[in-house]
Image 1 (cartoon, rainbow, N blue to C red):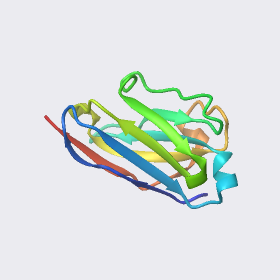
Image 2: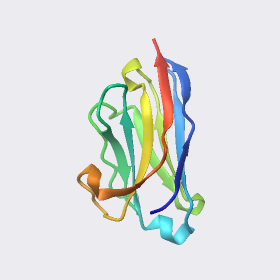
Image 3: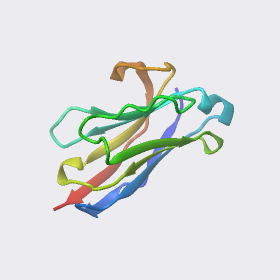
Amino acid sequence: QVQLVESGGGLVQAGGSLRLSCTAAVSGRTFSGYTMGWFRQAPGKEREFVARINWINSNTPYADSVKGRFTISRDNAKNTVYLQITSLKPEDTAVYYCARSRISFPTKEADFDSWGQGTQVIVSS
């Protein structure tokens, strides 16, 4: 287990932007070896995959619903992964979670074994 702390959520109008951050409480060398992911859970819905990034930034798949609008990145020196969100839509309203996987190319949610508490994003129309 590793402690993950998300921040950057808030209330924003449709079309706006946010940058979410997730910082891990581990050493820099340890963090750089993880694959990090972002997930979200909208009210009344199941948690869904948003994006992930492996340790050398060579693989960054996105959910179809966010392609072209969301960008995942990481700064291993700061033990932090980011999610830049642009062109926000009301349907992006959700709690956003970051998660850690020890697997280079995780294929399912169960491959992520540490989760943050989440940060709320609310998009008004």
